[in-house]
Length: 94
Image (tube, rainbow, N blue to C red):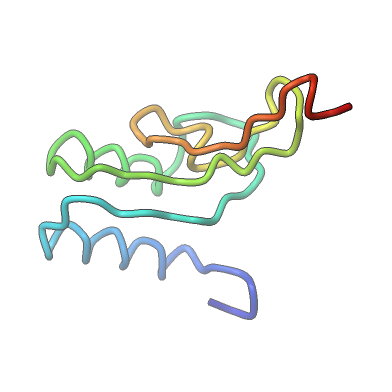
């Protein structure tokens, strides 16, 4: 990390280490804005972790809402990552 920023090489190394250690679950509590879903090297490797190696991948949705289409990557935009998000009901907005 550089301050509060992650580096892609660091994220790749972490995913590869999770595969090497045969982890059952990983949690990623960071997210970023994205313009395309299910795209990019990180997404490809994350999908491989889930589909080929059976690792459960949980990530924050990075909601920037409440509204439609306000989730970020990777949690809200990667097909095989379990995304965790907040929910705000109309009554809570009061």
